[in-house]
Amino acid sequence: AKSMGRGAYCTFEEGMDAAMKVRRELEADLAVAIERDEFELYFQPRMAVADGSLAGYEALIRWHHPTRGLVSPTDFIPVAEHSGQIVQIGKWVLINACRITKQDFGERHVSVNVSPLQFRDKAFVDTVEEALKGSGLDAEKLEIEITENVVIDDDARALTILKALKRLGVRIALDDFGTGYSALGYLSRFPFDAIKIDRSFIAGLQTSDNAMAIVQTILKLGRALGMRLVAEGVETSSQLRLLVAEGCDEVQGYLIGKPTPRKIVPTGAPPIALK
Ligand code: C2E
Ligand code: CA
Ligand code: CA
Ligand code: CA
Image (cartoon, rainbow, N blue to C red):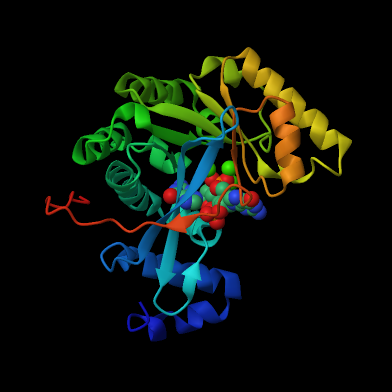
């Protein structure tokens, strides 16, 4: 990207603030990041509270940028969402998360984050099916994590996609629960299997009575709706104790395990085409 068009954009960029400039550069670099094999998946364990067993992993993308070093997904995912590149990146994530899980993790469950734009892409359900077929992973082992933004914009379309995913046999989790602005009615209209309580509430557990009350209420609500409850961002044993006492089903966080890299081992099978 650096060799291309720098001079041409110079006067334009002079008027832009630094953040916009970085965004443009990241976008240009993202365009070639898949081909150059700069992405990597890290896997963070989730623990089942009932018996302390490994419930599965969440796949989290990392970008090893050639000059910037490790770029956080919180920095580049919004750029990729804005440009539409998230559709292709998300496909790469799905394919590789399923492959690695099938190869390395004894067919444990894997949770994959899906952005709203990716979710609404017309090929999304086919992409999921392809990732499952290509890897040989059982559909039931894949959990798609979406945020409520995905469902509130267009109820009917979101429901159609979620039903198609359920027909495939994959599980659906509602990520970052409690951070959005929508009413709760959608919880009963959409076929969620799990709720992930946002880590901002977990962080406040010991210090704030309000956070405790919110977590208790979410657990109760989710249980009443027959959903699995996952707490994210568990960092201390006292947080864990409180969550166990309150009947949370699964916990995830630095206390249990940090996200760690897992490279795909080539099997000799032909690579799955990325379109
Ligand atoms: P998220 O889905 O809420 O993922 C959890 C984030 O919390 C991860 O950050 C994880 O590393 C971090 N985390 C886990 N345990 C702890 C803890 O105990 N304490 C604290 N403070 N943090 C913890 P990460 O990997 O930087 O990802 C950030 C966000 O980027 C994710 O939030 C998700 O929204 C997005 N993201 C990551 N990978 C993907 C992906 O493959 N596709 C899409 N669309 N989004 C992704
Ligand atoms: Ca997530
Ligand atoms: Ca989350
Ligand atoms: Ca998040």
